[in-house]
Length: 475
Image (cartoon, rainbow, N blue to C red; front, top):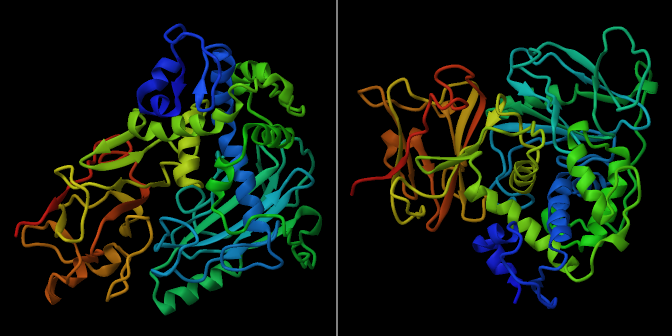
């Protein structure tokens, strides 16, 4: 007998990791034989280990495969500037944001450093995290860390040595791939859009060799072979194991693993994955190679239910270990799969809720209330909001075009000082509409954004602030 993929993902993973529990068998499609089990486990571990790097590369290819910069995409070395928040028709990415306007770009610092210039934000909240190829946030200039004044940085590659111009601070990237994922707070009014646009237009990005000189970026080159329609996660997940590990090995040449990865890499050499070398597919056994991608990805997604790093408080699920992962490869892969580009927890935490206080899935046929007690609003130094999504994590069309709710709606407090957020399809009445987040007629999902959460009591990071449950309103 063997182990089917269903058994592996529904509890059989524990058996897969316990040698001797399943007798050896002839390999059949969909089954994993005990012969070669060690290599199979190593291969799935290697897949999980490399998932962030492969996903980042595939994301980079799609986001930079354009001739000129637009709202969400730009050629390598150029800035894309989101000018407005998306509406309910937007379907490019799941769980869109209605609080900050993105200012982002991809650079390759393997050849030479790039200089990033940020304008004086005049006290406006912003952050500009820099992600390496493994999704680690290695630097994050912004309101919390560097203040809102004008600042200039040279982002240098792993092996770069040289002298920088006066007034330019070095940020050394661990890898050649760097994703700049800037966010600037905006209320969404026409006047505030204009103010943020002016700030976005002052963000500069040039190669070091052109710093201080007139510079016009070259037009982008469009590769027609790149799939621009299929979601990146689907593109990665449908790669066969040989293609996946071949790409991973190539990427590791310019995006070196950390010294802490040495024990894992020593194991991966057994299946032909060695840093700095091409992948040796001859060491990957053919009898289980087809099953590696699916079972490895199932292991990644299983962490959302079984990993203690994923907290479940009053129906809200969240992680306080993002941006810096060390050797926690499973959580790093999980965050890549469900929230690529996540900030460090000191900068943002994203509690998500699919069920109410009684454990029932949200449904627009009912009315719900999220109540914050007196002086118990989310403790943040940046901002907080609650966003409404339909079951597919897209904005919900509604008569007041409100997709998220936050203090910028001038929330009304109850006589006892508490604040109620009304989550329902119909208006709660004109006197309560400031506190209304419209729901669809069917299933929906809630996401809270907590930017720059308090790091001391009360704090969601250390658990001294607890998110209140969402209760079904009394009829």
